[in-house]
Amino acid sequence: MPNQLAKSIYQKLLLDISKIYEQARLQSVRTVNKIVVRAHWEIGRRIVQDEQNYNIRAKYRKRVLENLSRDLTKKYERGFSVTNLKCMRQFYFVYPIGQTSDQLGWSHYQVLLTVKDKQKRRFYERQAIKKNWSSRKLHRILLRGKIQIEDFSAGPRPEGKPVAKLNFTCGKLYTYKLAR
Image (cartoon, rainbow, N blue to C red):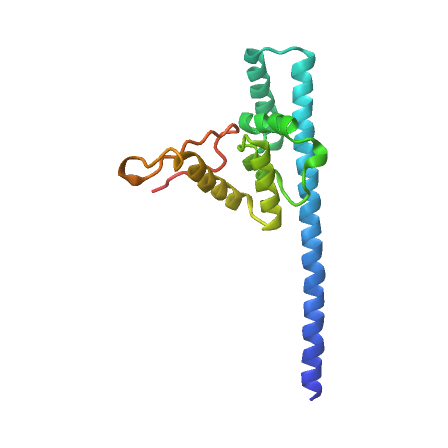
């Protein structure tokens, strides 16, 4: 009997410690997400301010982003592609900083930026939070949703298969390399 009691006490201790640890992990992820999202918004703001203050034309703007990408990638190794810098700039325009969620990370916002309609974007943002979607799941759902909205309304395509008409303003989110 004492052995059973010791096992029961141990199981409760294990469960309590696991809960504490999981809560701490969740809080740390949300804190990091909040900081990273805020940093990307600030980078976008700074790029926009620079462009507007110096009235930079498109040709020079492209060169500035390319130079920033090269120098920041050299310094930090990743996260500063020209595409990502453009997304940060767009993020600043689309999301006032007070309207971002701690529960979504930068990759979620990159996916959400592909949704042009503000109401649809807000809907998918709420769904991603409510249903705890990963950014990849959100991406898949948006792809499926855009196919249904845009292509099925236009009628069936040859062989009965819809052809997706997608317009990603931030470039490809996920690329794959086939290896032999």
